[in-house]
Length: 66
Image (tube, rainbow, N blue to C red):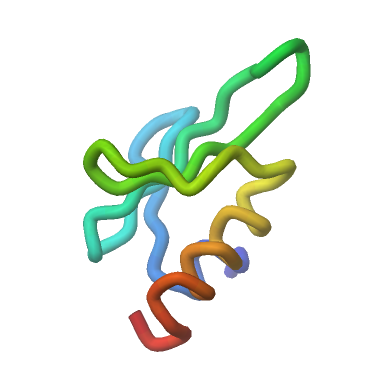
């Protein structure tokens, strides 16, 4: 099980994961580098170097059990 799956994230396409709380992580290329953007509605929390780092930010924002 991946770190993301262990925290409730589900892959919904080749470049996107969703969480039951409505948050999303999209994988994309920014200035030639792979990045992973965490967002909820129109609110973004930045772009991260890996999915795991984005998931960790989500855990930090919402708490471990959410």
